[in-house]
Length: 621
Image (tube, rainbow, N blue to C red; front, side):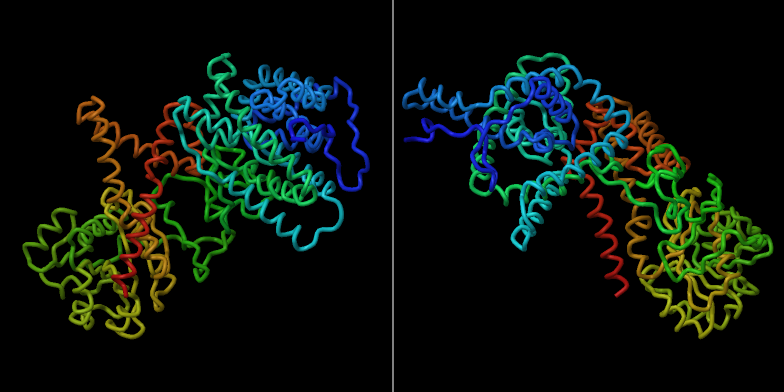
């Protein structure tokens, strides 16, 4: 007798359960169960299969689904089409299935729009709600597995958790809702109706089809709905037969795996994530909110307090108020545990009087010139900032360009200097120090702008006990919007360290970094300006191709890039939060962002920064 004609129990027996018997439930209860399944299926990250498992109808639903699909199969393939189909349909728990389907349909057609609005308006609260519900529901498959878990069960649980985590960590894409894209998407997504922990809505969201599908339901697009339903039925047939086989033959192991899948899939319900599924970072150590438990803290955009999207960013100095003053944006050490931190409650000394500081710049070229201009802007007097280049004419031109004083010779520039800036090429720096070390005042601090030459090399060449600082500025310091990485030598005093920060206060931002961090700094700031120029150029060219005049395209792209950076600096919100704020579901920005992801722009930028950092290491070694 074939499987199609063999009568089966309407309920899959559990181990030790005895003779199977159909469950008797009220019609109202089944309607409500169906409505609840329909509601959660509209929420990305929540599975209708989870609800079925928790409410105790999972096995019966799988068994009924098997008989329905078997009836369809024998009607098509035979033998004894009608009698065999009747037998299969007679084994279906219609008292469960019919009200369940009615409840699901009513819920989807009535609450799809409102639920979508709630998830969009209150994403963290809604995800947190369902996170708690699903996490608590994991106890159900654990209980149904029966008995204590041994090593095989633990391994199955771990495999299920990893699978759930992988499914819910899929990157978001944006596929056009064509019939041949919708078909496999529907077949895959409907599996979540059967698999607890895996959300069909989340899979649709990862494929970029969640919003089009929800919109089709809201607008009663019968063509889309019918096509989606047809292929959902195909997927349902496959997954139902698979799950029934597993529950009949491997009930304990299946429940263990489902428990793992539910745990791993909780990643999709983590409240603090962006619209593309990226997790928001924790508050950095030492920040204003790193010690504050959520929800009491709301002072930044990290996950512990991101419920306030427009709040100030976690500051390295908790006592410092937010400000746009460039002098106040001179930051402390970047994750350097050796930094000499100051007590924020202690009285802070007044800054050095830069008008009384004498600075000698030896080599005011492409980088030395902007550094000299930055120091003048910070408060150094023009007559006390002396420039000495390779020739008198070159010194005069450089001095006139930045508004400083041209020295007659290097010896004149170095006389009584408090700070000596060496702006020559890396291959020249050690020879220059050897030439000048007897002329550099003993109490002066020397700043090297040369990449690839370490503090140890500089200190060994200069003299023991002399103060040396490496500075890595980028080109935007010429307009006061750059970044400078400062590496402090072993003999630099606290007063000299404070003086160097004061001199670079108008550069934009100055940070203390270690020599190991300098390679990451090159990628994150040193070379980044060049990458930014390339991005702006590409955007401008595309704007021209789209029909804008070149001057208008230049102005719009540059101002928008400047405005976006200024928004982040002044508001302090995390970039992911700011991006989520402008990516309306189904909107132009979301579509454009999806194109960036498809073209690998994020990966390309990361590769560019990594290549710059690798090259920096090669030049240093």
